[in-house]
Length: 217
Image (cartoon, rainbow, N blue to C red; front, side, top):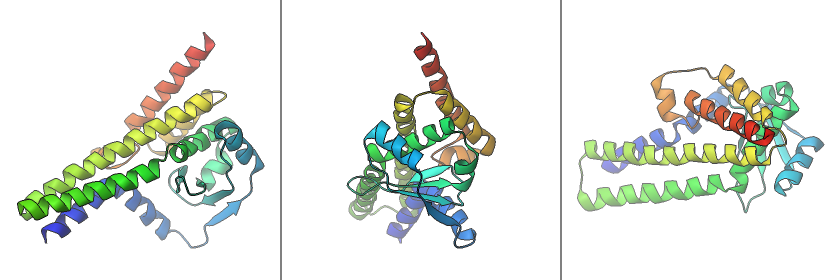
């Protein structure tokens, strides 16, 4: 029972953002996605990262986009219909390079390895120490939050990657502002359990604004 409590609490804490994402997608009508061929995006990715992006999927998702793969697998990028249709090229450049940052920096692979290691460690601790259910619950929360902090750091790292490869950082400012309008300040639970939150948007916007000033000097 303690193993089950730990595992469920850990996954809910570490992966609530992902769980909520797929809950939203499943709630949508089937077929709300399509694979597109966009030469501008492919050329942008190749010129900025050296990676050949061959699959771009548009989908009805809450986020502007996500990267579902990591080397050695080929990159597979998903963008929302909203972002693809409504963002300017400068804003798309930020979004696409942010998602490619996740791929180039192998964030999905690192997070998978981290979760396997922490889950294994938690189960081993329970096995060796014979802790009760409440202690298993606390352990699941603590290790889950540790995983979540790594995910938040990866979001920051991907934004730095995008900023360093962008032609004009104003696209990042405008793109983050669009996200801030889409995801306004919400409850403390969103700040705690999501990879992205309003305070992170503000930090990313400040980074881009400082980069604009630096390039103008």
